Length: 86
Image (cartoon, rainbow, N blue to C red; front, top):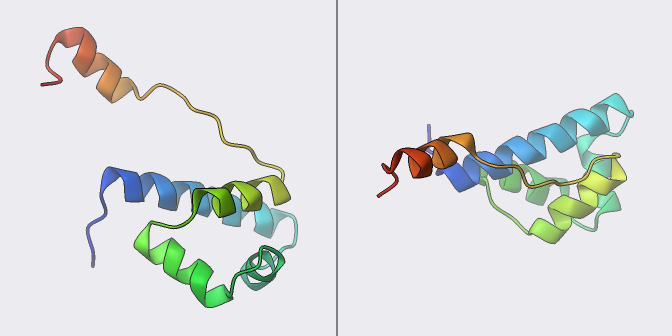
């Protein structure tokens, strides 16, 4: 079992949300990959490694009716406000 960095966890979480939305629309993982110009194996590696091309991730999100939005990370914001970030 590998340990993922916070960045990798965020990537995996985003990809999982995309895959769930695709499934809800009747789009299988293989079809999602092919329609975005990658192999199913590449999509699987992205999912397990927690890394990949953000442009591709964004394109897949749009395809299944999602979009990316930046939101504050309350954990970091709390640390800043408490003076405990560094």
